[in-house]
Image (cartoon, helix red, strand yellow):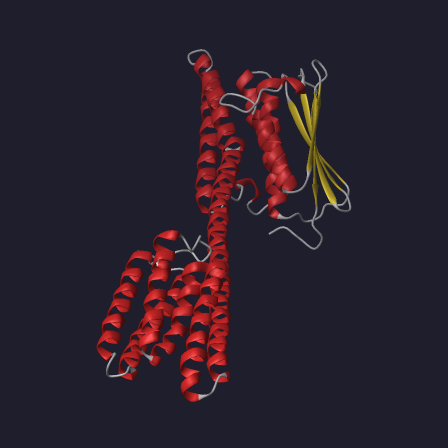
Length: 414
């Protein structure tokens, strides 16, 4: 469906008015003609009307943009010259043709543009004044009216067309601005939706990595150890299988919680410190049972005056602790790890320190399937809450992870 611009509607209405006005004035010119020249005036009026209709169909200036080039030799100028010559002869035949000068001037200004149109209006005015002064004034003895009439008509035609075209340009500019704003708003809405989708995918990826992935890794480790104990130590096998079942039940609870509201099961009706203690105990037990040796201890300490934290901060700290302890149990070969939760005036700090084998932080792999996602997930969580993450480690010297989160004033845990 074609939609017309405001300037096209203005020009279309102008031409409809000109159609009616010119037809009516041609009838008036024929009626006022002398009986001896009436048939000649009627024939010439018909020629002028045919030329006008042809130009309307050929030029179709109402469909052009208002700032498009105008006044081309063909068909614009040819049309205007034909109408001007026909009118000049008709003016010689009948005094009523003088009134046709006004719609002709309007047409010249619009079809030929402000420069060539002004020249054509000047010629038309000169012909009208000359005919009035040389022919009609001799009959009536009044010169001033025959001079002022065409001059005033020319001024009105020029001013009216320029004003209407300026209004059309302004309307067109506003329409384009509205369309651009609409497109921009649609683009922004689409970008916001895409950003929200990416953000949600990233958040779910972190949640799965820090919960389900860690639990599944622990289950796999426990079952692998149980498989080696089958037939040798059935009691240990049953203990390991039971622990694997417990880990599977916890993973199932986490999955169901994701569907509901993504609130960590460990924080359900308990404190962050108590949740950290359970996570620490589970990590140590999983590691020791899987290895068959009590080689890892994990302790939890607090400092400062504990205060209620917003739920997003509690969730982030708990997930980071889970991910860090998973790295300790799977990679560090440590004998002791310590979680310290420190409360300051406007920040909370979580330190995770182990005495394991350590590594070179600069050699961390980029995030891809199979490695490097844990640290990226931690940094992303901390960044979303406006905090900082510091990681210190070196081969043979253990690892220290420090997470600092701001405590928004006036907020409390949900």
